[in-house]
Image (cartoon, rainbow, N blue to C red):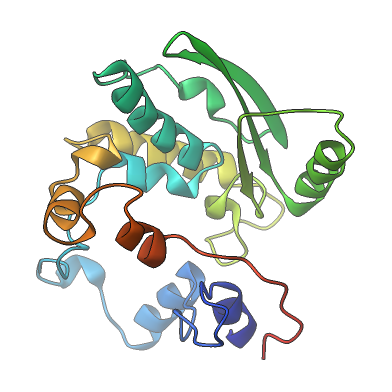
Length: 217
């Protein structure tokens, strides 16, 4: 898992933010090996500020989820109110590429979601060649998003990304908060430490620069 951990590094200094990667299937095997039944465990709060999450955070695992979560907040910033529940559901789906248009602040926003590295490569070639233009692009390496990743529960010969993705949207619909900007922990973090979105401190700590790596080990 060293290579995966290195790929998740957000720093070019050689210091990794992730020391080791534990996939969902590995966690299941660990629980079984130790004879741990999660249903018998008592409830404990998560570490703050990781305890509270919104439905927007949950859907990050499905293709189109990152875009939908961001659009919910963009709508609030531009329109000054919360977006209708179904405003951006059209970005959902497991298609290799999905292009949609939305209106925000009287302007047309052209979006594109792709999943699967083959589809991502084709999109990059078209963007470089000037054949297409989008205002907002979401790329997920795994077909259907993270829920379709290699470490997720599988059924031999059966694609599960769409099934698992729909479960994430069900969780989202049952959450009391559906927008990232309404997370009280996030609000407190900006108020007490980060100052405001896109502040110098927020840019330094939350944004990453991507550099070409030749050796991940």
